[in-house]
Image 1 (tube, rainbow, N blue to C red):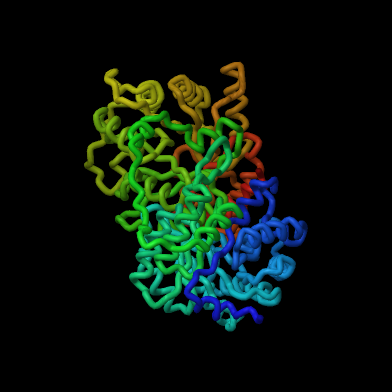
Image 2 (image 1 turned 45 degrees about the horizontal axis):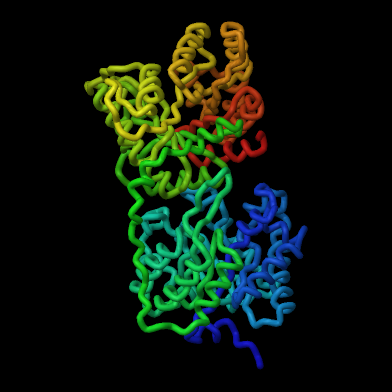
Length: 623
């Protein structure tokens, strides 16, 4: 009997069962995290084929090629950017061979993920270059013999629609499955609700539209319901993670059981999903449970479960906080890549979140969020930090100036930040209001930075306020301090730093350095005075210059910044290419400073986060 085409099979009322995770399963089975998963198609095809066979034996009717990140931008991290066609072709052929060897009727979907660097104006990739990259990947999958294309785990609707258009141009006969991923608030990173996503993907020509990754099955069920209401004529897919990922002992763990997935397979079928599968953290056991559930008879009294809070939720919320990821990185000697960001002047965070994602994709490990830099009015840094941590899944460092706050407000603000989940703060004096938008604004303060460090570390983190009154559960702040390694009076700077360390500072963010010799001179002087090397982790400031005028302003008017004449000459000679020359200077400084610091504190000029991302890219080399 001839196997029906993929389109013909979609017309059948019973859903198609897809497979589960590939990348997380490979890493959990000994493949190093730093390895290229897609490169295994060339180096270890039997390893990939074995996973395909396991999913087929579990009952999967649709398997995805191991090509999620097989585009020229992501493969460039492993030196494979010239082998895009080979990697995708191999991925498709391995899947085809697994199906043929199994003797089962199954379909192959060519897996395609986001390019990883974002589209302009928020990212670094031009639309035409992105389209070319998608077409290149699609052509390799088409040549390998896939039955459909699966665009999955997209967060940017514009990028997904561009990818769909590239598929229409490159492989017009291949059916398209298009899936977005959503944050915990059931919105995309740019704030789009499921209904809008469903309508636009349906209009873009996707044969199946849906949701993957995101949270666990419960969230996927909510999103799927909203998508169906907005586009009832469409066909849908649902491929959840095995719950929200948790960091346990340095490993990413997913806790949703196979039986739980089996129950939700029936839920997704009742909600009208044409394709049901799994994403991160799911295994052949999850797919086998879903297969068994879909094969069992439907009972008339089954209802969609509503997840209610457990009775012990209150006790769980009172458990001690784990250290922040930043604290863990500092304690284990990992190189920290930090980038400073300014909140917007209004209340729309769309561009901020897009830029944050660009920086994360480039390799940033933490983002610094300023509080009214140069005393200019901007949106709340607490809100910006909270939005970034929720929507982009990266930790932030909240800048916390003492200027303009009395003791009541300081403590209330710190507790409020902690309640929002913010654990990392950078204590500083703050800029005087006379230089900003409101020169007559109140400029007083009750406490200096070293005193605020003591308040956070020796009072709030011990469960008491400044007056000794209990605050209930202690806070768990990781606290940073400011440092100028090229100060004119090094002994005075070291004396101030000593107080900050004594009061509990966990790390320092250093002023921008343009002469590595001066940073080394500071460290030597510290060792002379203290009798031991500086143990406090220091993230040295790297400031990409944007123009000669910018460089001269910093050199002549900003205290603590000294730019060598040779660098000024390089920026001058670069002319219109000065921004890129500034990036090259910053990259060179990183290489020269890497042995003197525990991390890089990259300070973008004029909000040019795309240029900062280029500097972040270089950190991967220096690490």
